[in-house]
Image 1: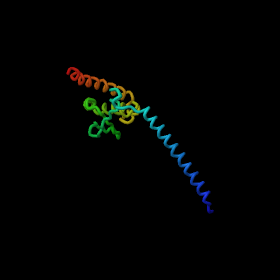
Image 2: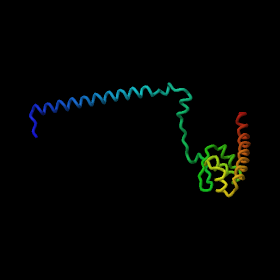
Image 3: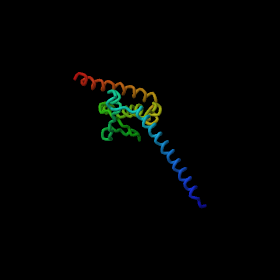
Length: 146
């Protein structure tokens, strides 16, 4: 189909009109988006200390962690102070504490895994936590005096 010169001019103008509308609408959308961002964004200088400190991200490297392998589970402890206290526990109590608090296992599940009755796990874990509290309080006291 061959178009006449008038038809070609009409199609060209329709395309130009459509193209202009699309560009105008895109420009409106871009300005609206810039306005939305401006309402949500803050300068760092406008943030409070608490807001700034919440933005801080630490770098966690595996070498900074204290790793324990407990019956096929890998447990990572970040605090060196806690890791030192945990290392003072006998191995069965250490396993019970790590499985309960770091792996979110129940006493019955820990007992089945370690071969102890549920009541023994609960008793030993409670005693281990008391020992840890004493050790950690002893460590914290000299730091508070400085």
